[in-house]
Length: 78
View 1 (spheres, rainbow, N blue to C red):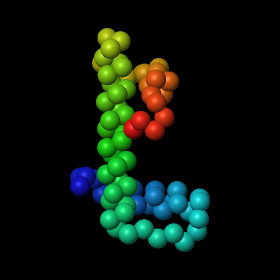
View 2 (view 1 turned 45 degrees about the vertical axis):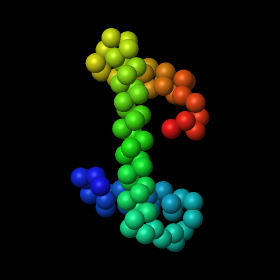
View 3 (view 1 turned 90 degrees about the vertical axis):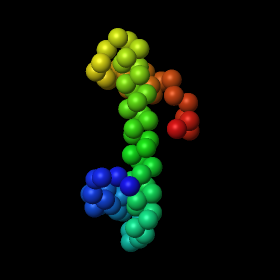
View 4 (view 1 turned 45 degrees about the horizontal axis):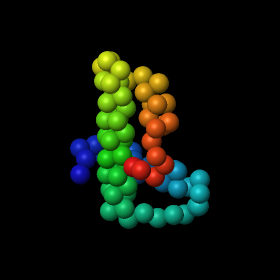
C-alpha cells in the first residue's frame, strides 16, 4: 500500500463518481485498488515521458515529451 493517506484520493473518487451517478458507494478495498492502479499507471507514464527526455539528451521532462508520448502510444496499451 502507498505511504500517502487514502482520504484525499477517496474524496476525489467520490467527487468524480458523483458527476456520473449520485449516491454511489465504494468499499474500502475498492478505493485502495483504484489508488494503487492509478499510482502504478502514473509511475509507468512518467517513466516513459522521462525516457523520451533522456533520449533527447535532457534530464528534465517537457511538454513536448508528453505530446510525443501521446502521439506514439497505442490506445489501450497501458
